[in-house]
Each structure stands twice: as structure tokens, then as C-alpha cells.
Length: 462
Image (cartoon, rainbow, N blue to C red; front, side, top):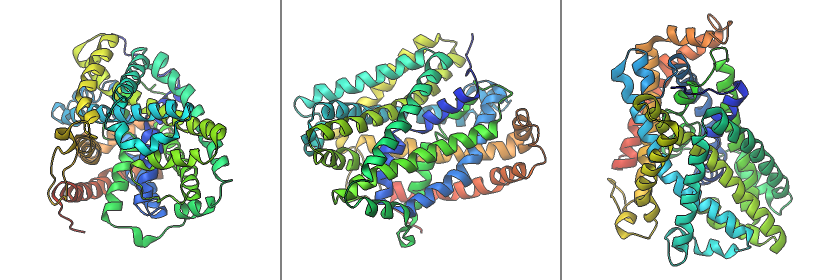
């Protein structure tokens, strides 16, 4: 059964960058920067992306290209079936993340429609909107279904004809829209206060919560630990340079996140909005900004922004769906189209509790108590904490341990050298080997333990 391939290196980079760039960069990253104190969080995020995430990314792509298999089958193809637990955990995290990610993507698409028709008042009813009250229920459920179907249609068309083609179109549009909004936002009153908050660090803001949130977001935004890059790597040509591809993917992701902050914080400070608004920063605060611009410009810029957010979401939901689909196609020899629609249906069903957990169902809204928590967590938060804050750092940790001590860095170097003849014996090889063997396992294991203790048990050691 033909698995398909990316048509060229650019196609892979665009698709992988599209996987990395998503709601995480434009919705999640800005509000985490706001809560984390601005530039202090930004610096921690950048450090994790390049010191910890880049070596893990190189390892994941190499494992995928070496085996030409999905996230689970790759470890079996290397002869280490027991380690396929990493791939299984990656598939599980991809399913969990997509199950709630699709819900948030539906909110974003719905806001695009609302802004298009000038309904800025939706921000005052965000709780009712996500709580599925009244007529909002039909709308939000409909938007969520539309988004899941759109994702499925792209993935069903395969690698070059679906995923790559969509990324080639959506990624340039993302950049054009963001840059246009940055240029406009910088003309607003107090815009420079937003830039100062974003770029001038206050190191007193750095605490352990900022550290682990930055780490989790780095892994989430780069699609690491969920099998996406092992899967995408399996469609890459042996002649492609893995290092340059990984570098460009990392730079694209970090770059989009960075300019998203340049876009949002001038908007926020121009209206004297608290940057610590949290998850509602985009959905509650920004529509008020757009409303202040008047009917025409408010509708134009507001709808453009949420169209951008919808595009960003789509580039990520496509890669999230490809992980379990590739597993089903490879391991169960199922036709791709059938695998896509069956997997999508299962994920949508799994996401129903998240859809209901923002007020529509008391059971799912107050679903679970964490140790030391002052209130119950909703189902969507639980899925996010398991899928993003737990599985992704753990997946990165186990991948680095597997690469360093089971598969061995010698084999990693041989795979990288196939597309980069100067790699063996180079300074870069020594740096990546050091990171994979020593830095990633030690730092990630310590941080993972501290994250679990702090997040789920309320035990704060540092």
C-alpha cells in the first residue's frame, strides 16, 4: 500500500511548520506570555525551543525517515518493539489534543462569522457562547463539526495532494495577515507600552510555573512528543537535510509566535486591557478592541484576525489527525479515506465532553479535583493537562533516552549524514549528541517530575 511522500523539501518544511504553527502560537502563546509576565516568559520559551526541543525534533524526524513508518511502527521497525510505547503515547496525545483543539478551533471559526457580521457584542457573552446557551448551541456545535470535516477532507487527500498543498497555501496567508495586523496595531495609542511589556524582561517574574508552562508550550507549539514529526519524517526523502529542515521549522514556529505577540499586545495595551486576561484574551478582550475601530474597520480587521486564527488552527488540526490516521493505515492496512473518516468520528465523539465542559454540563464543567486545587477542573482542562503538560514532555524525555541509550547516537548521526555529508565529526554533531545524551534526559526528567507534582498534586518543591 503506497503511503505517499512530500513532493520536495519545501513541501515538508511548510507542512511541518504548519503543524507547529497553530492556535498555540496565536491564541495560547500570547495569553501565556501575559500570565507569565511578558518578556520573561518569552525568553524561557525561546531557550527551551532551541536548547531542548531542537535536538528532540532532529531525533524524531530521523527516526521517521529511517523507518518510513508511523509513530508506533517506527520503533518496531528499528527492532525495539517495547519502545513503541512512545509512539502509542504520541498517538494517544494527538487524539486527546485534537479532541479539545477542534472545539477551540470551532470557537475561532464562529468568531470569524460573528466579526464578519459586526457582532462585537459576542465578547460580552463569551461564557454563554462556549457554554452552548440558547441559539449558541446550534452555532458552536455546527462550527465544530465544520472544522472537523474540513480537517478530514484535507487529510483524506493524502500527503502531497492534501496536507502539503494546504500548507503551501495557508502558511503564506498566515504571515501576510499577521504582518498586516502588526502594521495597523503599531499605529494605535499606547502601542509601545505593549511592545515594552513584550520585549523588555522583568526577571522577577520568572518562577517555576513560568518555567514549566514555557517548556510545555515549547513542546506543544513544535508538535513534539506526539508522534507528528516521526510521522511527517516518514514521508521525507533520504536526500533531504534533516538539520536544515528542523532549523527552518523551529525558526518558522518561533517566528510566528514572536510576531503574533507583536500583533496582539499593542492591541491589548491600546485599550488598557489586562494582559493577564488568560484564555479569554483573544475571545473576550480583542473583540472590544475591534469594536472601538468603528463598524467598517472593526468588521474588516476583526474578521481578518479570526480568519487568521482559523487558518492557524487548520494547519495544526491536519497534522494532529495525520498521526492516528498514519498509524491506522500502516498498522491495520486500512484504506486512507476510510481511516480518516473513522478516526475523525472517534475523535469528535471523544471531544464531546470538552465541548460540554464550559458550562453546558455541570458534570463535565466540574469534572475532577487536583490535589491542592481550590476548585474543580473542567474536562477540557484535564485533557489539556494530560495531553500537553504531561504526555508531550514525557514523550520528548523518552525519545531522547531511546535515541541516546537504545538506538544510539551513532545511528542517529548516520541517518542525519545521508542528507548532510559534512555532519559526521562536525561540531554540530557533538553539540546534538551532548544535548541528546546528557542535557535533554536530565533536564526533561527533572522538569517532568516537578510538573506532575505541581500540576496534579499541588506540591511545589521550587
